[in-house]
Length: 368
Ligand code: DAH
Image 1 (cartoon, protein in one colour):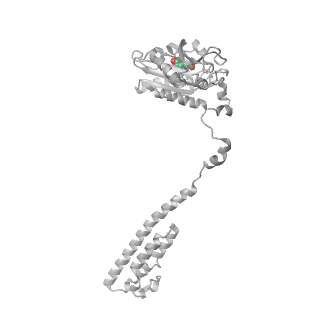
Image 2 (image 1 turned 45 degrees about the horizontal axis):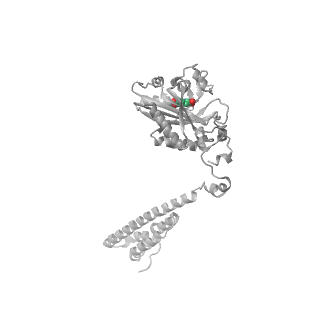
Image 3 (image 1 turned 90 degrees about the vertical axis):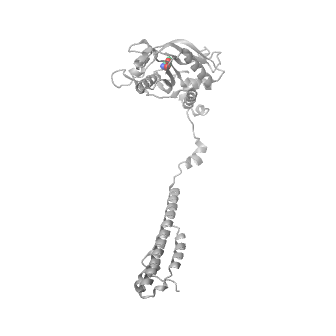
């Protein structure tokens, strides 16, 4: 048998036997398997199934055969065609997938490359600010005690920052807070929050609306007061508020919570104490202080020679505050507290002047 030749209009005149279908199929298998790209595969397809392909030539020669031979040969050609089409389709899938993968690899931009190899060695990568890591650590302590973490807005209305907290207009307690008012709405109606206590009001309102009392939450966030910066004060500072509203809550629960959190965060070497105080939103109220970490209670400039540093205030939620948010004070009672996060960072790390936290001196910041 002679090798198949290319097809042409005069194939019909040649004897049909010259085309070896089995041989064509074997050759096709090899050609398809070794085609490495879709372009190459296109060429192979034309060679195998195109007008000038041996199979096409064989089909054209069918007319010269006797009826029975034509049927057998026709079927063999059809089967070979179908087999080749199948081989091509399979291979095309593999090749396309490989090409797609290669394109993804080639197109990938490694944006970390420059930072890692060149910049990093000279500039360094930076890290979270001490106030942020302190807030995270305090959150961890409270989450460990069963509190959840919530947040509220920094711009507040008079109602949330004062009114709902039992501080009506002209109440002398407003003098405790030197407030930054915003030129929005009626005069003194909108302000930067002076404490995180308004978040308590949001949580109580939400719990009443959702019917989801009790509440056990801490609320960290940024606060603003028109204070002159000094060793213990910043006009922009951070507080963490705490609120528990449940059945049968007593002052002992509050004292235990303060004791547990200060010990967990500052360690056994620092003691905490409560002193009677006044806040309009709690009754009774207390201030809580810890031993000054800089002088260990001996007295120094940072603690104004008292040996104690005030962390925050606390107390039993005033029934007037529960009523303002629609909570039945006959069924529910609660305690609340609020303290300075920056103050905690200062005491935990023995920082004598709080202003260092915001001066952005990299030599100071990189120590933490
Ligand atoms: N909001 C008070 C302040 O900034 C601190 C405070 C006192 C918060 C008593 C409380 C509390 O939740 O019960 O000075």
